[in-house]
Image 1: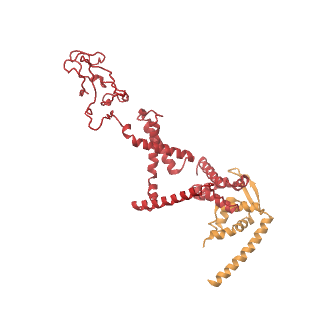
Image 2: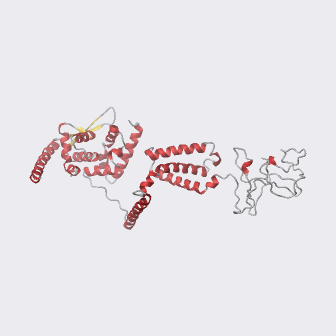
Image 3: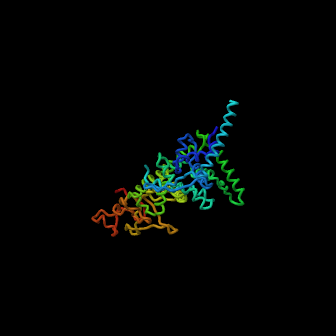
Length: 107
Length: 306
């Protein structure tokens, strides 16, 4: 089973989750996702998702100037973002439980 | 660690291609979407080396994935209005070429002919460099006789190095139109060299009088007037006014001289066997002298004294 299809459905949730405890900038978020075990996540997908979540009003951004190299744009959850994280998290858990049950019965 | 100029050039190139793939979006949407990309690409390059294309895939694919994740509609398929038949023809031609490719490949022991052709790419890098330099000299941008100076050889060597570097590493980047133009010029150059190989290397005048040319053995001509005086500096013209070129001009030319377009006979002045042996200066070509031992007629004679 190809995880990329699965990932498309829950990338929003994954990104929100990664930002829950610590703000991050694009590449940093990508690294965190990958080291959490989501190796297949696409570079461009993460960027696109960040922009979309921002447009949807669930993320805020701020720029951190840097002496060596370009300024970095950091993303952070706002209240709406945390609410969505909680909600989507619940939906996910329910769905995963249902799938576990299904597989458990037939496997 | 790559040199800053190299990597920023690569980043600009990649960004430009991504931007092109997103060109149908409104400018503010596109700019917003791509805002963080330069910094991101710089980090990608710093991480582990390799090129952006190797790490992230082709820019067009990156743009498509970016667009999809951002929830924007995918790029509208470009279609030239009113030419669906042309597109169908092109598609058919492509398929046909593909079949040909496979069949030709099998004939020579490769899966596809293009697999074999790909192996020849390095040879093309060299040939195209030579072709370009050939055009430079063929058009007399640098005069042809200076080829051996050794500016010609230096140019060929330099062109080969640059051509192989571009072919093998893809740097320095050439804009597409310049690349196609240079390739066209190189192809013309190669064809020109092939077609005129004899002319580039000719060291004798060619006599276009047919295969069984009775005067083919002639290397020099010694005109003599009706009184038997040897003439000098005579140019010969045929009935159409074209100079007659006969003989071997290189016997007498010094190392850095080119044979003249219109030769004057005798071509080798100092070796005139017809000069009298009685005291006349052998290096006085301007003074005709009576020769007693030679028949009084215009006759070609092979000079063997050099």
